[in-house]
Amino acid sequence: QVQLVQSGSELKKAGASVKVSCKASGYTFTSYVMNWVRQAPGQGLEWMGWIDTNTGNPTYAQGFTGRFVFSLDTSVTTAYLQISSLEAEDTAMYYCAREDSPVYGLDYWGQGSLVTVSS
Amino acid sequence: DIQMTQSPSSLSASVGDRVTISCRASQTIATYLNWYQQKPGKAPKLLIYAASTLESVVPSRFSGSGSGTDFTLTISSLQPEDFATYYCQQSYITPWTFGQGTNVEIK
Image (cartoon, rainbow over all chains, first blue to last red; front, side, top):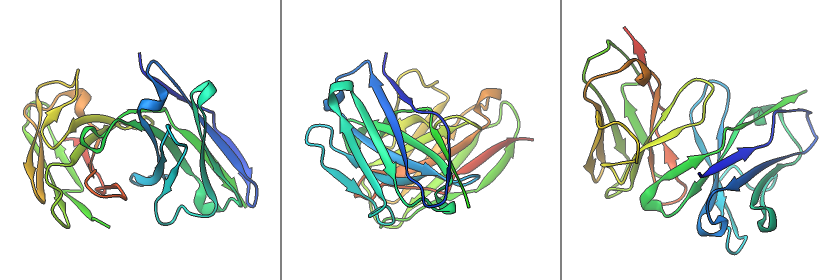
């Protein structure tokens, strides 16, 4: 069965970096792009961008350029989100979600990784 | 960016009620519209893609309709497990954008 398993909660100080992982199983990793979605506490869903798992080419939404980096390790079918120079406003749940094509939506999601930034 | 506007933002309903949630796009998105359900502390779950296609294992009491700019999610007979927040999302042009969510509460 398809599973996306994310790394656990992180508590970081402002200015530090964090790397969230998303381990995929149950399907051919390179057949689906991987999206990243942020949800601030009590707020809605915000698309951060995606990474092409075939080429490793990332696409970032406005507001997620510079400090945010998507990467892959296809040998272990894992996608990563790294955030540097953490700010209090980065406190949120971060989800990975796979996508076959725009027609089919984001059909499987990780359980989420909570990143908390203290000042 | 395409703006997605849901209405209402919240609603109270009883078990067995018919519930309708609207989603409007700021420009035409054909049928590139998806609906998700999110329960507290859980990841979103895809319910409907391409405006009206039910994801596998989603109960048939859920349905979606619309094209262009106006879309609707209908729950024909609300069940206890349906109390959640629902989001629409357009996948027509990046950046993908979500509606602000509709919280369905127990009356």
